[in-house]
Image 1 (cartoon, rainbow, N blue to C red):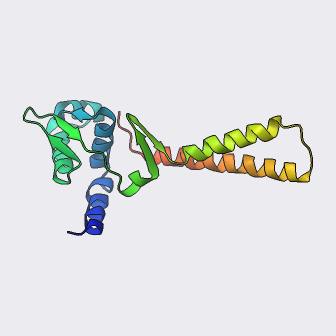
Image 2 (image 1 turned 180 degrees about the vertical axis):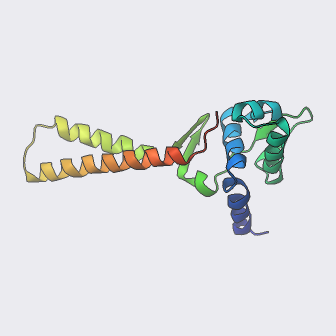
Length: 148
């Protein structure tokens, strides 16, 4: 199976499956979990359902299972997760960096003592960029499934 085919399979079977994606996101945040812990954290009806999704992650090499039933995550970007930056337990949309940049520019222009038409145009563009970046960041947060 080629790399592109494997990526398409991941997008379909993991990123395209709501509960499997929730399970993977939970593992990314926790680094390791058992079927029972996953079931409780995600409010699944049974540990068997959680184990099904965890085993599915193992089949796609996104997790490994220890002899004692503990699953460990393997971090990988695919599908919708390419739009996010992961650092430890944090999973944030990449657009958050634009929010920071436009916020700094907007504050800088607001506190600046210069006046003139170019200053006004630049200020308006910075504030418009900030509003758009905030809007997109909120939309990206809503796309992530809730993991408890």
